[in-house]
Image (cartoon, rainbow, N blue to C red):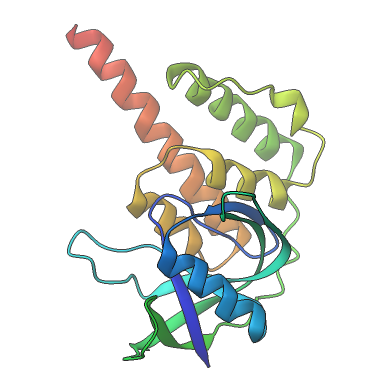
Amino acid sequence: MELPIFPLNGAVLFPDTSLPLNIFEKRYLEMVDHALSKNRFIGMIQTKDNGQLFNVGCMGKIHSFNETSDGRYLISLQGISCFKVMEELKTSYNFRSVKANKLDNKIDNYIFSDDQKNLLLKLYADYISIKNINLNLKDIENIEMDQIIKFIAMVSPFNNIDKQALLEADSLLEFFNKLLSIFELELAGDISSKSIN
């Protein structure tokens, strides 16, 4: 399928999550107009340091749209599924577009234990403390674990490589384990920097 893409590092969309976007660049206003005239699909994807696209992104469907008085678009994308870039297309559009293969969402019925949830929330509490992130964990601790891990991945200031690794995880358990590894490395680095100082 042909898919208009929005290359935006750090703002990673995951299947079954929502991402609000403030669109103001002319080429991306054109991209939204194009998507609205077709099937409402936009591919969110990150780029490497050389500007090349990563191989995997997430296809989102515009599920809310507002135009502001100054001509910006406020949209919300609902994550549908991951996609693999087959090739970048040459088009007459001002925005980039790719030939994409939609990747089937894997049915994953993995059930997390209370111990896994408690460990994740403890590490996340330590992480947001060292990053000075103002977040009340009580707001998320009662939602399902598959949503908690995706929420954490979306809102946390991880580097692009870490966010990409989470997006490409093959299962909820792999996603969870990668998330734990990111926290453990960040926390270990914080302890090391404090001991040096």
